[in-house]
Image (cartoon, rainbow, N blue to C red; front, top):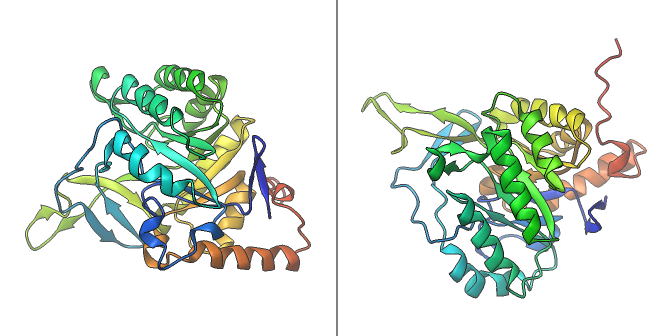
Amino acid sequence: MHVKIKDIEFISPLLTASGTYGYGHEVQDMADVNQWGGIITKSVTRHPREGNPPPRIAETSSGMLNSIGLANLGVEKYCEEIIPYLNELQTQVIINIAGSAMEDYLETMEMLESTNGKHVGYEINISCPNVKEGGIEFGVNCDMTEKLTKEIRKRTDKLLIMKLAPNVTSIEDIAKAAESSGADAVSAINTVVGMAIDIRTRKPKLNTTFGGLSGPAIKPIALANVYKIFKAVTIPVIGIGGIATAEDVVEFILAGASLVQIGTMNYQNPNLGAQLKEKLSQYFSQNGTYSIEDLIGKVDCHSG
C-alpha cells in the first residue's frame, strides 16, 4: 500500500490532518505515530498565537465545529522545541504553515528551512485571511494563490502542498493556480463554515459565532471537491473530510485522491491510522487490488 509523491515514499495512504494530532507527542502514550503514512503537524505561524477565546469547540450532528484560531507557539519555539522531536519519528513529517500576510508565510518557511529538520515537506494553509488585503483569504483568489505559491516554491525544494478551502466559487481554478505556480500537490478540503446556537441562552455556541465544520457530515462535500480537482489538475490530490472507515478511504481514492488525511475521528480514536491500515490491506487482498495507483480516480461516473 505504499504511495510515492515526488520521490517520497509513504508506507500507507493515511496521514493525520493538521491540528487533530498536535505535534505527535501528545498522543504517543495512546498510539504509535509511526504507523501512519505521515503526520501533518499542527499549524505554525511566524509569531505565537493564543487563538480565539473559549468556547471554541462545539459538537454537532456527525461532526464538530471549531474556532481554535491557529493557537501555536510560533516558529522560533517550534524550531527549538518541536523539530528535535519530529526528527526522531520514523514516519514522514509534513509541517503545516499558516499566516496573515505574505511575509508571515515566507519568514516562517525560511526559518524552518534553516533548521536541521528531517521533515519532507510543507502543507500551506491558504484559508487564512490576508490582513494586508482587507481580510481576503489567499485561497479564494487565483492571483493571490499564484503569488504565494511561487514565492514559497522559490524557498524550498521539499514537497509543497497547498491546502484548499471549499468556500470558493471554483476550487478547480484555485487548484490550477497552485499547480501552475509550482505546487507538488493540493489537499482538500479544509473545514466548511458553520454555526451552532444554544437555544437556552439564544447565543452562538462558539465565541466567534462561526467556526469550521469537520467530521463525517462534510464527507460528501469533500468527495465532490476531490473529484472536481482530480479532473482539473495533473498533480496529486490529498483528500480530507469526514473519513472514519476503510470504505471512506477507498471512496476518496476512487474519487481521485492519492493520499488521505484523517482528522476529527482522531479525537475519538488516536489509533485509527493503524486500524484502517490493516482494514485497507484486507480490502485490497479481497478485491484483487495490488496498488493504490490501480484505484486512483477510477470511479465510473458514466456507465448505466
